[in-house]
Image (cartoon, rainbow, N blue to C red; front, side, top):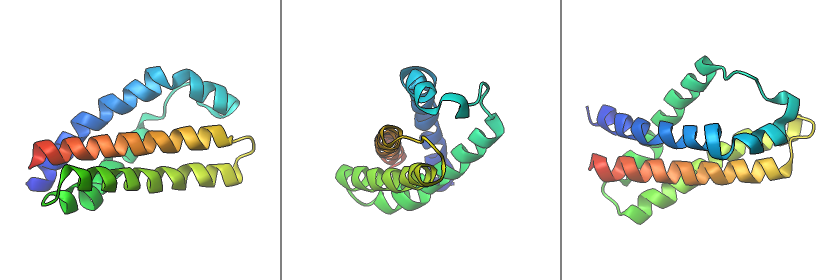
Amino acid sequence: MAFLKLYLIALLAFFPLDMLWLGWLGRNFYRQQLGPLMREQTDWLAAGLFYLLFLAGIIVFVVQPSLPGSARDVLLRGAFFGLVTYAAYDLVNRAVIHNFSWTLVMVDMLWGVVLCSTVSWVAWYFGR
């Protein structure tokens, strides 16, 4: 039950933040950087599967271990988890996709850090 509560809190924080970034603030940036690689329509099945798995990772690897700790603990763990997970995606893409720019790599990794640390803190704070 505790996992589900934390998961739902994280979902309520994650989805609006990521939609704000991808759908509005960063939309033109990604279009410019990805060019013809970017889909016209989002594959919501793939996106939904990512969200389900990623949020479970945030809860299991960041929020639950941070519950007895401080806000600093959860923010640092969340930032590191976001860096590692987004780096895996971005650096592999940089390695294998032609014209996957370093600018895109760095901006997207930074977004992963900000998003994951924020969502982790929200789930930790409201889930205690």
